[in-house]
Every structure is written in C-alpha cells, then in structure tokens.
Image (cartoon, rainbow, N blue to C red; front, side):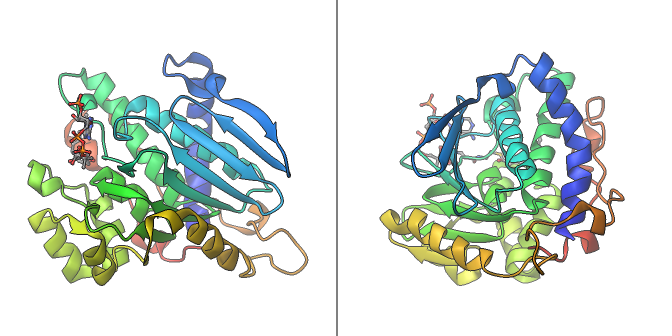
Length: 297
Ligand SMILES: CCCCCCCC/C=C/C=C/CC(=O)SCCNC(=O)CCNC(=O)[C@H](O)C(C)(C)COP(=O)(O)OP(=O)(O)OC[C@H]1O[C@@H](n2cnc3c(N)ncnc32)[C@H](O)[C@@H]1OP(=O)(O)O
C-alpha cells in the first residue's frame, strides 16, 4: 500500500518539483552537483542535503547538513523532496538511510522562521512542502531507515516516524517526540496517525496530550525507536540493518527487480494534495485514508 502512496505522491509531486527546478528561487536541482567516487559510489550535494549512492548495494545515504539544527525550511524541504524523488526514480536505489551531519541534532523540525510573519501565499507553499516531504518519505517504495544521531523534536520526529525503521544513538541527552502541544500547536492528524502506527493508541495519546519528548532510552521503551546503539555505530548499524531488509524478496521477487513494477499496482491516487495557499483553516487537511497506508515495505 505504501506503493499506492508513492505513486500518488509521485504524480502530485513530479510536476511541481520540475517546475520548482526551472522557476524556483529556492535552489532546486541546479544546485545538486553530481560527482563520481571510487568503488561504484556516486554523490550529489546541494546546500542542505548530501546524497551518497553505493551502486553495488543499492543503498543511498541521505545526509541532512543544514546548520545550526537542520530545521525544515521551504528551501530545505524542497531540496529534500527533490533528492528523494531522484532516488525514487533511480531503479538501482533500493534503500535510503536518513541521517544528519550535525553534531547532536538530527532535525529540529519545522523552521520556526517560516511560520511567523509570512504571507498567506508563503505559508501555503511552505505547508505544501511539509506535506510533500511526508508523502514522499512515508510513501516511498524504497526501504527507509532513520539513523537518528541527535535530538529530533516535532517535525524531526515526524521524518523519523515516516521511515520504515529507526535506529537512535543511545545518548540519554538526545530526545525525540512530537512535542507540538508544548509549543501551543496541535499536531496535524496525519502526524498523529503516523505516531499511532508506530507506538499504538495509548502511548500516542499521552505523547500528544502532554507534548512529550522522550530520552533515547524512553523512546526505545515506548517503541518510538526500534534500536539504540552507541553513537559511533548508528550509521554502520543502519547499513547492516538495511542489508537485512533488502534480502527480503520484493513484490515482484521472482527473477526481477525487487522494486515495485508500476504495471502491477493500482495507481489511483488515494491521497490528495490540497491547495492550502488560500486557507489557513485547511492547513491540516491532508486527506489520509488510513487503509492505504497499512502495508509498508
Ligand atoms: C506557516 C504555516 C504552517 C503553520 C502550521 C502550524 C500548524 C501545524 C503544525 C505544526 C507542526 C509543527 C511541527 C514542528 O516541527 S514545529 C517546530 C518545533 N521545533 C522545536 O520545538 C525545536 C526547538 N529547538 C530545540 O529544541 C533546540 O534548538 C534543539 C533542536 C534541541 C537544539 O538545541 P541546542 O543544541 O541547545 O541549540 P539551540 O537551542 O541553541 O539552537 C541553535 C540555533 O538554532 C535555532 N533553532 C532551533 N530550533 C529551530 C527551529 N525549529 N527553526 C529555526 N531555528 C531553530 C535556535 O534559534 C538557535 O539559533 P541562534 O543560534 O541564532 O540563536
């Protein structure tokens, strides 16, 4: 079912991203610099995201590198979605590890500066970019693993939740959670549903009502993350875990590419992007039909 999301997201997104690449003042594809590295590796880097692809394993590492805290600005989100779309379109890429280049921070979540004092048009564009990031990550047909090597509040936690598996550094100073309530913000229902899918109803209810941020050990206890490892092992463990996941046969396993074949899936969009640019009330109106999201990987 994630495939359905992937394709509906792809059709909603590709055109828009393509337009952004051509017209946007936000950077976009033109800032991605491809280069070849030894051993079948390739890398492309924009100002905020580094993508390193190992063609021999089909594993890409997407590293967020936007100081000071990898906050999710419009520029960041646009570059992120473009990077992920490029990997999605690369049939050789089967898994993506999401991590941070910044010490102690995975991502601080939505960029606060994008949310105050901006025009309704800008707010609409920003909020759409947040939705697109989530659709692209959650709906990916690739295996996605979050290598959480620092704190990850709010939208940062959402990014991790949108991945298939979460490995966190076992540093008790790092925290993770959907703490929006503490900020006086109600987390949109699709944030909530993503949390419920991971930790269950009761833990999600308490987390959201109290805006809880969990230390790494507590995050493991509640199931918010799947594994804690020493900080210097986060990335290598993510690679090992990815190798395990990629050994699982895909939908078209018999003699074919494990990535999904578009001819065999229902591409009818089940998720609709809504135009939020003229309505602050509809900011949270991503139409999510839960049963479309029940079968990841
Ligand atoms: C416009 C339309 C959309 C409106 C929609 C609203 C309704 C719907 C929903 C809501 C959903 C919200 C999800 C979110 O993600 S909201 C953002 C929540 N984020 C946080 O609460 C994180 C706040 N930050 C922290 O907790 C810490 O900064 C931390 C990430 C733990 C790092 O701590 P530390 O290492 O001690 O670093 P500093 O606190 O000193 O921060 C360093 C500099 O970074 C700036 N910063 C921090 N967070 C953000 C951020 N989210 N956006 C932008 N900038 C951020 C901080 O101000 C410092 O800057 P400076 O050095 O210039 O002072």
